[in-house]
Length: 273
Image (cartoon, rainbow, N blue to C red; front, side, top):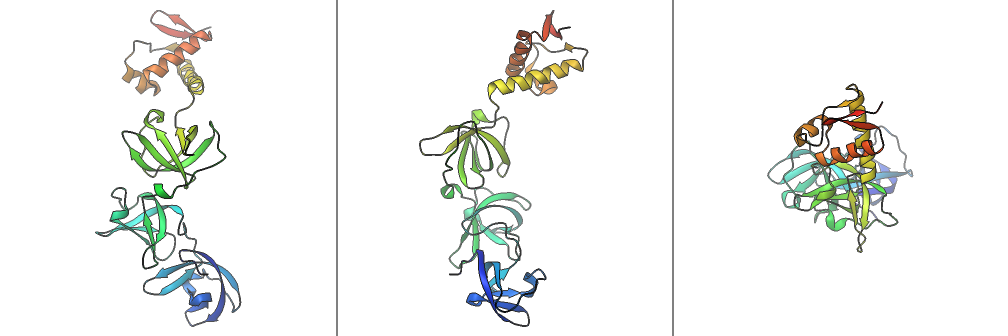
């Protein structure tokens, strides 16, 4: 059975002046063979799709995704109908306006689901959440990679883990503002009863304190062992100098003091000699 928008193993059954004819009458034009030569009877793996002008055609070019796959594709053009996405083959994929989560611009990379439209052509939708799956055999604390496909300022960000599984990060687990299409790596903090995964982009507190303490200690080493900030310093000043919140700064300084690495001198601290 021939599957459109996917790779198929097809046999060469004829050769014309401009193309090979494969099983099911699929045409493989010479310019799509990438200079490879074939003979009648050869079995080849090709990507097959419906071209409105040329019919059912094949290519040896590498497609960036198959029908029913999630794919991160680049916008190569827009018009009043929607946007055109580069799939890596001769024909761009149409993303209709009513299938967009937001208005896209040329050059954007967006996560889409590839589907066949009513004319059996490859099309795309940005509404991917209904097609994501539940990832099994995962553990709390495990690191996962994903692509952000939706940002809700009141809730958090939604991502497709490995491009195919449900993932969500609450606002209070974010360390900065994120944009749709960003690739992130986050730590699993909860696995819901429905199997959906919640993650965090913040480090565990003990690790964050270790890192922040080292940052402050290194900062002091470059300033003759002295800290030109204290718990009364303006939070914007702390942020500008150390890129830490005032709360994180106070925790890290307290940790260094308890460990005996720094000593209090008047309203500030110095590295213990």
